Length: 632
Ligand SMILES: Cc1ncc(C[n+]2csc(CCOP(=O)(O)OP(=O)(O)O)c2C)c(N)n1
Ligand SMILES: [Mg+2]
Image (cartoon, rainbow, N blue to C red; front, side, top):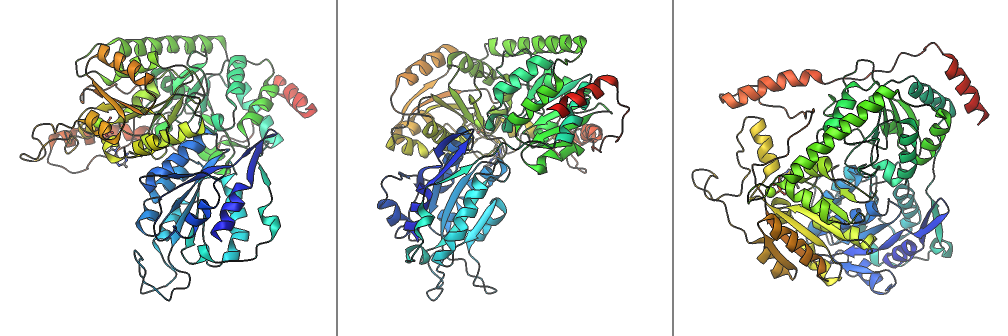
């Protein structure tokens, strides 16, 4: 059966816009008794389906996710693990993939279907059922989950897996739990099962009536704002969006997933949206009367915990392949592909533009924000350096097509705000799961998907300590990563948050235990750590040293790690925004009481959104527009 699975996977392709490509780029894995004789043997006899030995199962799912995200979800990798801990190590990776809507195929080994030898090594026993294993943990974090108890079940399970993986609306982690014994069993599979199969990734169109209505809403808006999410990039709709914004004058704010939708210099680019957003985007959002949300889940970081949109008359048009997202905020739902819908909406709006006063306001806000970024980049602080000036140096040093990869800590916020993106794939962020440890492994997957680009993994010291071991895999595979490690001796992000909620940074710095965790900073030689794994490494303390170190690291042919010490206490502030992190209602601490009082005030701005009033008097131009749309 394992041989049949690999044979089937090799034969699967996807096509979009007439372009076809092989869906699976190979298999990442770590063997144990739960997969070595089944899937392991099958991989050995299929050398044309490359196998990559990893160091940690969670990391291999991150790498598959990085690969698939970089491929705009049109390709992915398979992950094989043993049973027990190898399998459950993948659960975090599965959650990350599913939350970010990224396809990955997970094949954890499972306990014997035959059962007679139970409990086997690493088996979770249940006195209540024999139909339970640790792999049941994958159910809530998978978009499709199955346990293959008989070899012929893959005849129906694998096509379902492919349907979900290649569906833009449904995609996420797919888990097929493979009992150790069933993997090795023989079955006479029909030959047709292994024939080349192409899965078309459709560009679904919106309902024509709703599309007409959306065009009317846009025409009657005075202060519309587009929020571009990851869906814009996955749909390869960035050029179309750029033209749409230029023609209509509607400004565009970007989520983490959607950052790079517009070139940073685009006159309609308002930059980052929400909690980690720019003053330009957040001010526009506060007064917007129409939000056109494209390909976004509208997470709390985008909506500033539902406080971002304060215009009482604000309404939403959501363009999304997933009905679930299209209906959020009581929106007018355009359940459809972003590229297709932007094209059709653009036609429907013909030469309509936002009012000139609004255009001038957008330009003013853009200029003010640009000056703020310049100010942060130009600061010369320390050493230790400010994180903002390091981001500035990197933004200046990297080529437009280079990719930055990041996930957790204070960097996502600073990068979202400050990074001037010059390529739709230039900003690769996991901010759906914001998973410490994604960075190195995810970056490896990104580079595997497009070896022609330089990949810069930006990682905090906390994230690095959690998961840096795939540096070894990058060396094994001769896949070069440029890693930049921001060493601020602990959790600057959560330390800042802790102070904001009145807890003074408790337990967020890497210090020796002396009357609590308040002793001297624990010195960690990260450069030596990276060198011990085989990477080229160098530490930099000043701005000039860092510039030199980046240049030398770039010349290396193997993975490099540049360690830069940054100031734990120097943060880029928030801009006209808020994030809901509840503060203790009762505490003896004055700082907590004060934070609570501020919280109680701030939370009042949170809004619910209800459907817009149904009928509106139709004006002449709208009627004319309808005729035009009807004609096609
Ligand atoms: C796996 C995981 N555990 C915990 C968290 C919560 N968390 C978010 S940021 C952070 C600290 C990150 O530290 P570091 O990488 O050094 O970045 P810094 O905050 O210093 O910029 C923590 C613990 C998380 N996002 N992911
Ligand atoms: Mg840190």
